Structures are given as C-alpha cells and as structure tokens.
Amino acid sequence: MRANASQRSAIVKAMAHPTRLLVMESLMRGEQCVNDLTAMAGCDVTTLSKHLSVMKKAGLLVCEKRGLNVYYQIACPCFADFFRCIDLIGATRDAQRACAC
Image 1 (cartoon, helix red, strand yellow):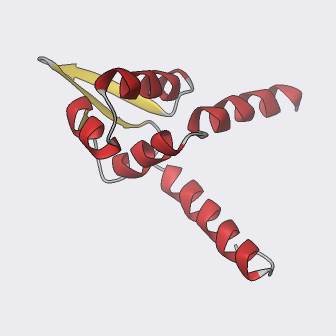
Image 2 (cartoon, rainbow, N blue to C red):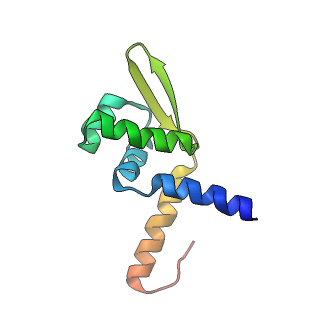
C-alpha cells in the first residue's frame, strides 16, 4: 500500500504545474511535436523540454524521434477520465455539494 502511495505521489507531482497540465490537455487531442507544444505553452524550448522530461520519467508521456523532430503523446489513453474527475471535483467543491461520479 505504501509503495502504491509513493508511485501515485510521483505521478501527481509530475503533473503539478500549470504548463504540464496544459501540455497534457493539448496531447489529449493527439500527438504533437516539441515545436508545436512550445508554441502552445508559450515558453522557450529549454523550459518545455524540462517539463516533458519530468512527465516522461513519471510514465505520463511517450515520445518518438522522427528526423529532427520529437513527437510526444500521452502514455495512457484513460488520462482524459482523470481530467474529467478533477473538473467534476472542482465544480462540486465550488457548489458545496457531493461529487456525482
């Protein structure tokens, strides 16, 4: 049980930054190259690369190099369900009622 908690904590920490959440949300629409993600996130390539590295190390992303470009995609397709759950928790918390999952 403790090992699962540590693993879950590492994954949640890897997402715990607004830029990383933007990247994950963008990648829910499909794979993208680093240049496209950099433009979307509004930061420089070095900063985005550090974020991508953290997320990849946590197992959130997979990547593939094609020529000069590196393409990223979400490693687990059920991640969108996690986002929906977070959004529902936020909405029910704001309305001060129980979650309807």
